[in-house]
Amino acid sequence: MNKNDEVEYCNLELRFDRQHIQDLIKDLIQKGYSLYWSENDQVFVISVRTGRKLVKLRFQRIKDGYKLVGDYMIRDARLSEWMEKLIGDMRGHAIVKRFRDRQIIIENILFGEVIRLVEISGYQQRVLYQKGPMLTDEELTKLYYSIEGEERIRQRRIEVDEQLDRLKDALKAEDTVRADKCRAQLTFLTKELYMLEW
Image (tube, rainbow, N blue to C red):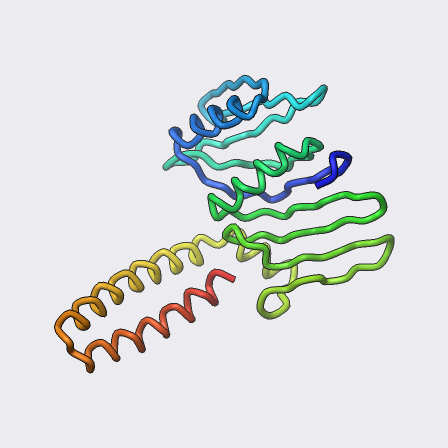
């Protein structure tokens, strides 16, 4: 990333527990950032100084932890790299807009993975990458905020783990019929999981 680039992070959806926020603070301090933090009953705020600018990361308190909320314009290359690694590591959702000269690159990130990449130059728009079938903005928004989708993904992962255990037992017992059934079920589950995660 060029040092003059601006990156805007919108519609962020990343969830944390308190220990993870403390780890983020340590990480930012180790990277040499000057920062301070404050909290009240609703929000935990980490203020990060980047040159003359101050970026305030807002973590909204939810029943089982915290959620990073808000839109952020970041002009610091290292902090942008940190934010993108965080989105990937937390398998979060975001829309990332990169402003360069007279061009904007927009990434739609779902579960930590880029699912759509669009380049805008002047009035022209070009899709550089699209994972799976084309989704409308309404469908993307619905996926971002779908709790049901996350629950289905969690359930399918549990089922995959259970099938892997059954397959291991079948292979140990040299039971080829049971092993084949497990493999067939794993194929079905992984396809469904892939479709849910894209």
